[in-house]
Image: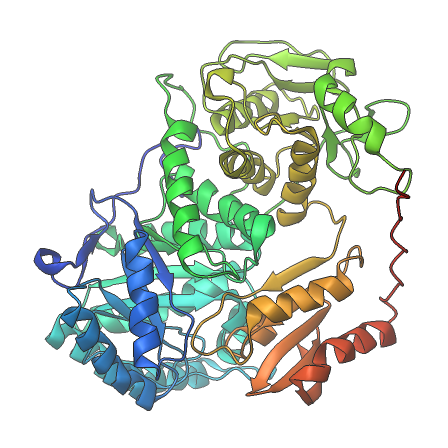
Length: 595
């Protein structure tokens, strides 16, 4: 069963409507034919009413349509009354979402004051101690009954008060029960959410949406695709709305690229009713990226061409790189086969960047496009390729969105029994150029990142960014964010919220200053333990807020050092990296003499 109507033709998934607040008084309707909603989260302490109100107003001022506020305790949840009262006094009627993880009683309190409550099935009335245990069917059923007893009161209260719920699973916080039954998998995330949905439906409550968040864009994409299929399998009235987000995306270009790959690719396939771009930055910055990203989707999906095939050229539920033979790009580099995905540039870009390239640089062109032996094909027409050892790409000017064109190219090669390596381009139609840098970044990330997540692509070319050095760097950053190549330190950094136990922006900057030269090392920076250990499962090291002023250090998802004073924690992290043989001294920076 496919997750969308066609991988080649855009058609938005029709979700049932979910009402959040009173639409006549500033509330919103999610799903149906309504536009995708932009949301964000404030970062201050929930007990600070004035700051919470001001940060919410700041978000509304830049276009945020739903604001989430953490409520880790009953006391925090009770203070939502004061926050909402003050907001309404200011004439602000935006829907507020209470973010609940560990305490069902906090959810019950929050539901009295806000329009929506977000619950995380992995933490809500379930356990996560990373304990390996075999569950019999009887034990599993008993656990489900216990969860139902904890969750049902919130369902009934939400129905009574006309509240909405968000059932939001996170890759980093699956319960031990789910982990032991399904593993740390997209299926585990989906089944965890469906358990809670069945409880809601048992009481004829349908005013809820789903989310499936991960810091890994490929995992996140697979989760949402699988969720949609499972909902369709459950029945036609299971068409609940979906919230999209890449959690712990980070900051700056890296955070925007990761979010564009994960969120953008799914939007291009017609999935998604609300979105959040989670950045380790001030929250209003997230809305600008949301708006810019949503504006690109029609431009990346609109087509008058009607395709006669709906065959998927890739497995949408399990990432597997398309199998191709290896071939030479030039005398220095090969592509395809087991080779890493290569980066090529245009002749114009080469002339700009070549004089600045040093022998040890990791970011450098690996070929010039105009020098390559590449067959430029029109996938809307029949073509014949008589061997597999020919690099191919989509011909410029083809009247198709780029994602559609390259998927169709891969499908036609498959039908011909060919496995030629494919060169991906971020754009094939030049009437859309030039783009300002922030738009070029999003467009290239959506197009190339989406295809790489499909397993398509052996060489990439970025042309939408006009700056030579910027386009080269963008290509490498897309490969790193898509998990295809590692040329620098990789950071998994959560956005700030009221649970955060240290200043994430400041600490992230400090850690980057000390570690940004560690090529291939992945470091997770987590403000609290809600998603920390789980999201750090594929990180080498973790820096996690354990208590106010205290930091816990992890290797993978295993805590190694506890309650380190925050002032010492960055250097202790460096010591931990050194102890595990991952530390190298940074090279001395070149000093250019003034003349």
